Length: 372
View 1 (cartoon, rainbow, N blue to C red):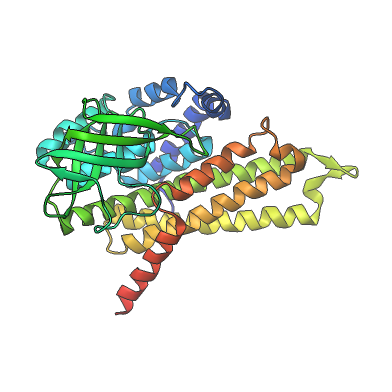
View 2 (cartoon, helix red, strand yellow; view 1 turned 180 degrees about the vertical axis):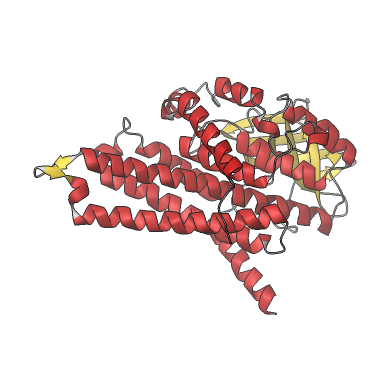
């Protein structure tokens, strides 16, 4: 049985890798980091839109390319490797997925076509400060089609045109709402982040008009959790890509840096570090493949596969980023070295859709459910 990607998918991955190496190398991420006025690499994002990347997994009837989750996974891996500072994940992994899973046919047709055409940047607004939301802890309210409350942190909040927002209705049931962020009832506030190349912000709703996305109650909560599971798999591939880039960076430096008359890569202590990172990366990649299979096939195992992929990839990326700094030694801690770019991204992705503790609880819950 072959669990690898197909030749066509590998060809897509190679094309994405070549584009990002040419248009979005680490100098682009550093430029966004160094310039507080830049929220993302707009020129790179525009080129991605022209190539149809935003609509890669959107069905053709909604104006997309009509490829699947596996193609999206190979793209995510390369986006993570390059640290591309673009709103791809918030728009494609989260916003589009929520509309696809929860929206009506009319909403899908209108919203997804705009994303595929490059007219809309989207995001998913679910967090309300520290801690992960639960149906009984959501404070933002949707009353008579208008939102009242605040969501933060929200990925790409400062540049998004629309959002799917998790709220509660008049009956205190969870619901998902589709919101145009350009209206007067929405205020934005930029937030400081460990990784400014992926901007974070707060969205304040003061009577903003909203459309209900699907049904309220258990149905809405199930859609929300399914969206997070799908995003967890895709972010796992981003994290694997970043971890692989860290390992390659450490290997390259260890082969170039000499100490006591020979490359430091020849020393056993460095070899052991790099070997441990490699093992962690391969374990994360295997679990990401498991998640990709479950996502693409619509398997009932998706909640378990997504959580396993998420935890494994988070741990692998954080370890790879930290060890890359260590292998670079004193140089690794400087602003001029690229190590901190990966360290920032690894820490940012680790908490973006719930911290590892939340996903470990999901693993436990899924095993208990299977045993029961």
